[in-house]
Length: 212
Image (cartoon, rainbow, N blue to C red; front, side, top):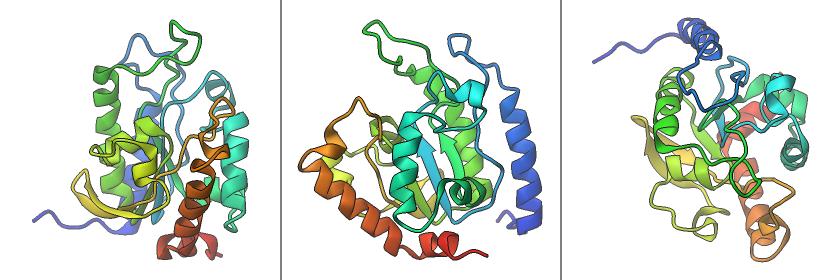
């Protein structure tokens, strides 16, 4: 059995991981810079899909309009954007902007790009040891709950899952993009409310919300 690392050792290892991650240039079709959240040990991990064109220059995930919507959701649960960034580890399926696709939207990352970034995500799950994972958007949800066919099957509830060797709770959210109407029309609107209520009631979220 591998000895469990103490929090200070895990935090130092996570900080080193993020530094190494920011220097990654493994995917030639991805557009840098690498975008990462702060190296923070947290009972909650958020997993986004991939940064957009604005996140790289801003140097942080969810830095544009979708982020404003998402942080408004979390603000309703007692954690504003500044506190969230300080208290929750923010990961993603891919960490660089994929560029634009043929139809004008952001390109969906290729399987090999997802796999390469997946190694970073696996290391983060091991180091952060989250109790609650919040995957945002279909691509992120598919990594944690690969059997989920549609958003309506998983949004609005907490699912127990094994992810990169760790048993944890998963509370999926729809992507907060303004281009999507899913979270603003039924049944998405009601399921989003249920999902946020489930997150707000989770002990891991309470630990984040009430941290002094």
